[in-house]
Image 1: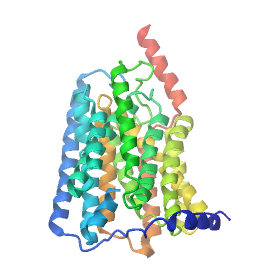
Image 2: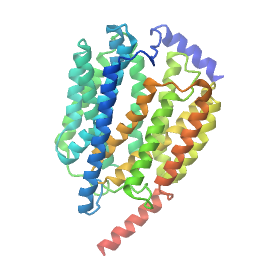
Image 3: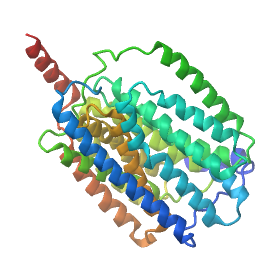
Image 4: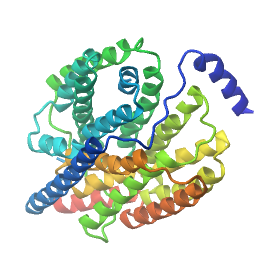
Amino acid sequence: MIRPFLSVLSDALLDIAYPPEIEVVKEGFPLLPVLLLVAFVGLCVACAVILIKKSKAKNAKKPENGNE
Amino acid sequence: MLFAGLARAYTDMSIVTTGLLLYNIIAFGIQPMVGYLCDVKTRLPIALIGCGLLMIGLLAMRLVWPSLVLCALGNACFHIGGGRDCLNHSGGKMAGNGIFVSSGALGVGLGTLTGKSAGAWLWLPVALTAVSMALLIVMHKRKSAIHPALNKPFQCASERFSATTVLLLCAVSIVIRSFVGFTMPVHWKATAFLALLPSLGACAGKAAGGILGDWLGARRACCISLLVSIPLICLGANNVLLSMTGIVLFNFSMPFTLCAIASKLPQYPGLAFGVTTLCLLVGNIPVFFFAVPAAAVNWAVAALIVFSCACIFLASSGQRRTKLENRYNEREEGLVS
């Protein structure tokens, strides 16, 4: 019951106003930029691990008291 | 909106998608570093800086790539500002954090719709950012020390395991939630309006998850909701109501994972918030490159949710917040007397 209602409502209000949805492609990526981006994520993960270790070492020195 | 701007500037969809990937990586990847910086330099008005960067990026939208980078940097900064404040002022409760993060899911859905309107709605994010900046300036002037009643540690995470183990379990759960959230079968998302509903479901689930987690206990709320979401997501892919219920339940665990990570990094709420967004990014990246075969989607989704549920079961405390709070208060009173 809800589905046809939503469909009709959306068709009437939105589909006319907006262009068709953009599909995200999964092939044909430029290899070098994508490899660089993925390498950057790896770097971010490595940095986060180092920062967590650093913060845990500092926390060990301080008594636990709230978030800040 | 940036995605739509890129699509207008380039006909090659691979460039457009790479642009989206670049935005996600900057916006979500650098948040642990920004968060740590804010935890060390506590007076840094990072949310205001983020809104400023976003405003410049929005106004320079004709320069597609610089605008994309500026908006992504702004996103990283104001998320950390808001998330950090929320964790610091939540009084050890998950509810506030769930509500804060839930609005992001709705924003992504509304932004996608706005972006398809060929730039006519650009004034809306510019106006909202300006209002946010004005409020932040007012709040920054009034800012005082955190009230002791609001600065209680989170006690939703398990004490049986080491902090590293709990962090790892929560990280795995977030990565799975991100990946499954983008790959789960939603066959009814045929129109622009229906495409907005999953975002609404995710928003409702994250907000409700925090409230119910405080009430029922993190383990009970998250594990039951995740297990119930499996048949609804996998078997109700063609039905709006079943699928939406599944999406709502699937997102219940989000506030727990954020608060559990924050509980294990008590002096570093910015870093804790950043770690969760980095995990979201790690779960999102495979979606750009790989499509799970249609025949295997349901099995993959079910197996991943069960695994995520096991991670949360081990990482969470089985007790309700009221009991935990009473125990915390007794401990505090014992220390005072």
